[in-house]
Figure 1 (cartoon, one colour):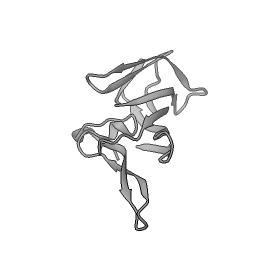
Figure 2 (cartoon, rainbow, N blue to C red):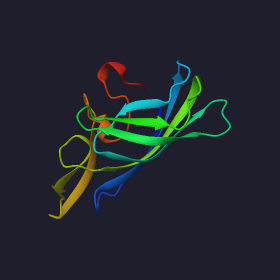
Figure 3 (spheres, rainbow, N blue to C red):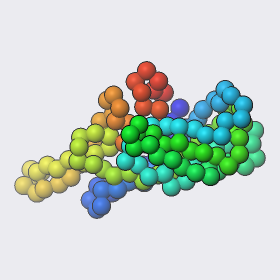
Length: 141
């Protein structure tokens, strides 16, 4: 499951800071990379902590595939098999494309222009808000 925290900035530069903790159960021994969907997000830091690990394992490299809208985190050491938490801090932008975590303009009752923030995650747009598995048949709760 996902534990997601987002700090918005709807009235300024339309950027948001996010942190997602993805609780997983790694089924293979010796994995050293994890690939997630991500579009228009910049990952600032990533680590993985196995349930029985004393310290988290950091990444040595972050690789973006703009064509596939994915990000691959390559870890400094093999990850432990079993339950663990992938922790990712990132930055995104409230786009004006009505997709992901976006911004829209409107006029309030007093005639003032204002901005609202909304989400649109249908099909493949959650990846614009946070790094995740964003295929309809594979989504988690």
